[in-house]
Amino acid sequence: MSKQSTFKLCLVIALTITAASAFGAATTISGPLQMGGGTYSPSNKVTITYDSGPTATNAATYAAHSKHSAGDREVATNNSDPKMWWKNVGVSAVVSSATSTDTFSSTNWTSM
Image 1 (tube, helix red, strand yellow):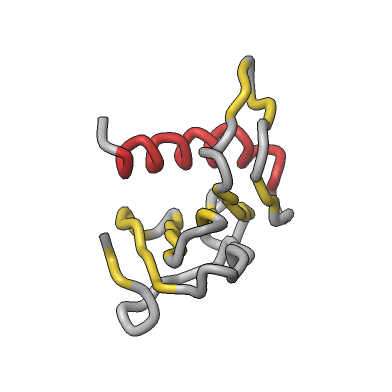
Image 2 (cartoon, rainbow, N blue to C red):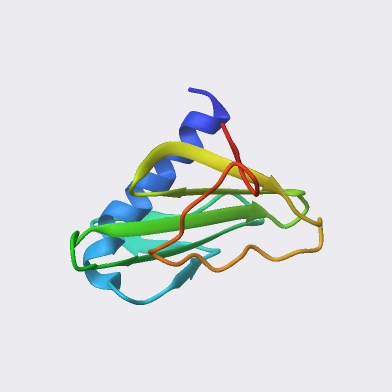
């Protein structure tokens, strides 16, 4: 399995299992997290921020952003678009906080 596919799978698992208890609260994952009957942990030095919450038209909205502490790319996704998006950021930048209403445009983000 490719690194990108593994990342997507881990991100989906993290969002799916934690979404029910996290509605309306932004969360940062940077270390081991108990989910269901096991533990999820992002790769070393990778931080994920996610937010999920209900809206007037859809009770299952979410967005997630991730970044390696020594990397110059931030990767993001949301529930309304099947693509993963990325943008260049400074190596010293911290991952931006996700909000469940995040949308990604081709002017700021590039689709994978």
